[in-house]
Image 1 (tube, one colour):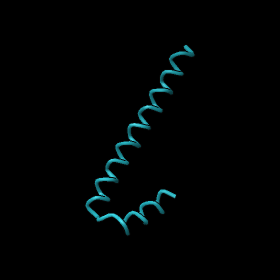
Image 2: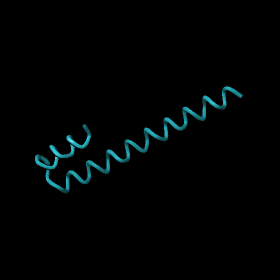
Image 3: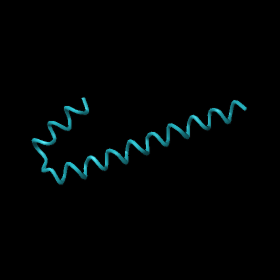
Image 4: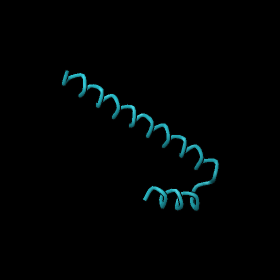
Length: 48
């Protein structure tokens, strides 16, 4: 599904803009993973 989005995007959006959008997505995913990891740490700390 994400791949389809990028395939469609490449046809509509110029390449430079697509690259910057992809970087934004990478950052967003990284933040999401960090938040998930923090939540897991909080849960494990609470169980102690």
